[in-house]
Image (cartoon, rainbow, N blue to C red):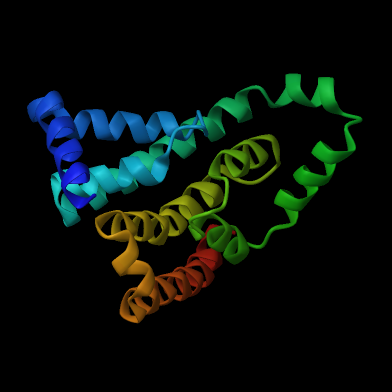
Length: 188
């Protein structure tokens, strides 16, 4: 199985050649707008093919940019959306939920790897949340999320069964929470 995965990675790397990092970057941005695409796979491929540091940084920047594009698109369509769905109880409830989220909870929501970022981007774009506040929450929250998928991508079974890896991810989430508390004082 490991041989097949390594052959697939080699094939992908050779197919895109020297511009593989651009493809990886664009795929992650695109995933922020098309949630069916597998973000975990793209991050894992970036980390495996480009190395832990460069693959991580590229994936993190692309994720933040993609989420902000999605956020701004929804913000741009906010008035049309509100006119059409003003009476939809589910949408009104979700919008209120996003508006009431504390900064720290927003960061944690964005940091948890299994949270549907697409839905959060749409909800934040349609809500009254401040753009700077959302952007700073993305920068902080996406850091541990990308780290998680990069680490998992390198060795799925090893990462899940290794208590050291789980401890690192937990520390990253706690750190993101405390950083968000400090940044929140300046973002208000």
